[in-house]
Image (tube, rainbow, N blue to C red):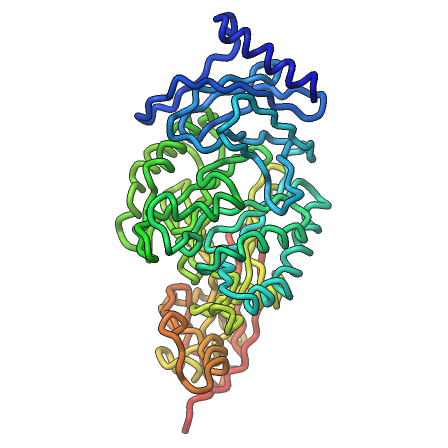
Length: 486
């Protein structure tokens, strides 16, 4: 360590003497004037000096030189100096989350990264909205849901480098639970990042101060890390006004960070953008505030937005090479029921890169990744909207899935996409609130991922073949027993 810091100090002398020409800082084009402060540091893994690593204060950017050294103009607004960990390395995550940042109050910085599997294969495990508000709910989170998440993370990590990310609303206005959550995430055995959600702001404060509790535990609100040949960018999408009031959109700091970062990212690199609020809120035509700027910055890249916030599950194609994976809540219906308002069972999504191909799959805590983790069966008579129909509720579907059905010897035919409500959720939430006093935010949600067919009651059971965009098939057989009340 003394030798490393001596090199940093030597670099400082060279820079101040005007002879450090190998490492010219790259300045973020965002109109933030850097202060006169210049900080210096080193990025390494043990005795291996790491070249070309991106270092930032959230406003300005630079890269390490061939000796692992960097100089960075520090913005007047900077709170942190931090690294974008390169593929094959990760920052220490023994605390429960990667410590990729340092407070900007120092003048020299030493980042010692940990080596990991350097192959291109990886897994990215993504959950949204655990959102616990008290010890009772946190105990439920730490039981079956965390156990399943941890077992999957460890199994994937045995195959290749695996990281996780929580898409915000880590807690529900319970700032004291943030450190406990971070500590429990050590159970996953993998680096597990977090982005900030609206409930992760302290309602007693407003503006930037309201995020202080979250930043004390997880660091900068906008950051990035490489995984395989791809990059994951965590962005803040909450413009917080105080007292639980907020606007949905990208604050200027988030847009500035993304713009500066992407100028240093190869033009053909696949990008994950992890954020709390979906890009198109509730399928409205216009994106959230600042969305047009984000699309302009990301133009030309293949992009997977991974988002939460809505507590329902939908996948929306934003363009030929852009998808918004809006992932349902890990908490089910606010820890009172095991299903979300659209019928999605509590669970999470896994992105796997294997042998040059990317795929993803939804996994539920109770059903794993089998047929019942992919769809809900609705028999005739169970839906008030389509009482004569057989329906399949396919939450993770997108435009490249197919849902085919037939009876007996009839030819397979596509089912019709419709909007409906989940009978499973309705039953689940009514059992949770037998007095009928269901909170408004836990009432059933009409969803666009149902598929309908009208069967012939005399033709035998309905058989359905569900195929996702990657060719994986699940089969369902449904007895045609009409459950309409006489």
